[in-house]
Image (cartoon, rainbow, N blue to C red; front, top):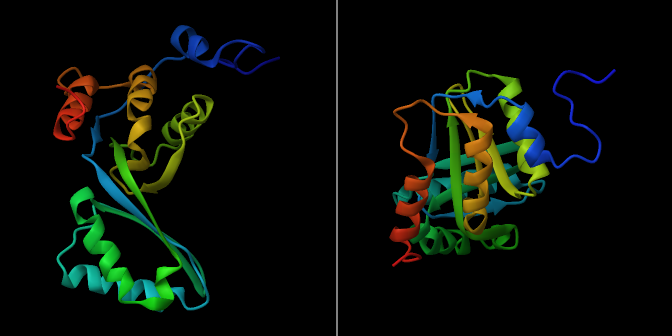
Amino acid sequence: MDAPGAQAPGCDPRLWRRVFVKPIPVGGLRISPALAQINVAGGSDSGALLADYLHRLAQRHINLPFLSLSSVEPTYAAAFCVTANEGDRARDAAMELPRLVSRITVLSPVTAVSVFPHHGRLRLLGHLLKILHEEHVPLLAMGSSISSFTFTLAQRSLEQTVDVLEQALALPENHTPLRSQLQVIQVEQGELE
């Protein structure tokens, strides 16, 4: 026998969620303005190189609104974001470290979406990952803290992501509508007249 809420074979996942899956209540959701994401691939000397690079960014007063770090000693890899207008400065700082240049990939524009508070609820994390996968929303990076679950995605996927999140999450009544947040971002980038 299928588990409660299990999807019928051949049924459209979006239709199934609308009819049978109750949205998960959350405290809020924040969509960032345009960011540049910098991915740093690992290597045997990656810990020291990454530390040096982050130090150079700090010297330039470049803020990192998102940072995801993974390590299997002695190798480290990172994905972090800077504001879109700081992307060139962050790339310039990397150019000062010749061994690092070939390990860096810059993706722009990206957006960070934060869902809070999640309080370590694995059900929320699993639900979001499942539906974003079913809707073919490509995630670029993920991070979690005590207060929020944050993921980054290409900005061209933002409208589709908002559609998915509106169905999957129950936001508080006084929460700014997601469409308003999306329009502000589009106006800031000159995408809307």
